[in-house]
Image (cartoon, rainbow, N blue to C red; front, side):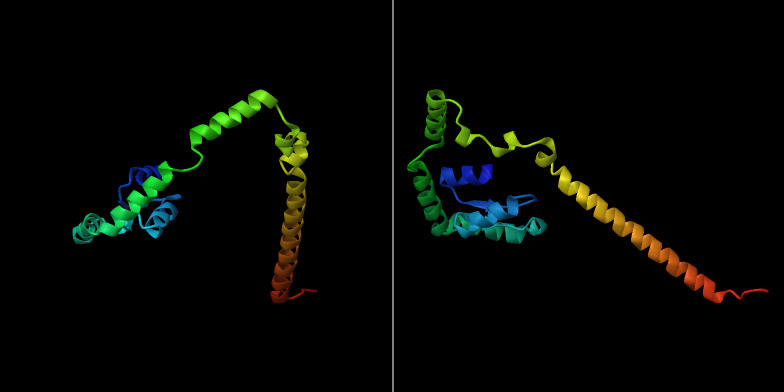
Amino acid sequence: MGSAQETAASGVPGIFIPIFGDQPRNAGMMAYNGLGIVFDKFELHDHEKLADAIREITENPKYREKAALVSRMLAAAPFKAREKLIKHVEFAAEFGSSPALRPQSHDMYIVEYNNLDILAVAFVVVSLFLYFSINISMRFKRRIMGLGKVKAE
C-alpha cells in the first residue's frame, strides 16, 4: 500500500506488477482509478507486452492527467495525517485517559479474552465425534470380518 500511496501522491502513473499479499488488490484499485496499468507477473518474460504497457503509460495522456488530479486532491486533503496526530495528542494531554475510549477487552477475564470456553466446547465436540466414529467403524469392521468366518463346533 505504501508504494501505491507514493505513486498517487507523486502524480506519476505507474505499471503495477503485484506479487502476493494485498498487492493484487492495491494494483487493481490503482488501475480502477486510472492511475496506471496492472501487469501480470507471469508475463514478464514477454518483452513485447511489457513494451506495450510502458508505451501505453507514457503515450496515453489520460493516465498522466488522472495521476496529476489525484495528486492534487491528496495534497489539498482537508485533514492531514500530521494534523490528526497532533489533535489526538493534544486531546489526550488535556483530558487524559477516557473510559469511553478504553477497549472492552481490558475488563475481560482470561477465559473470555482468549475464547477458552468456546475452544473447550469445540474440543469436546470433536473428541466425541472422533470417539463415536472410531467406535462405529470398529463395529462395522468386526461385523464384516465376522461374516467370512465359519463357526467351528
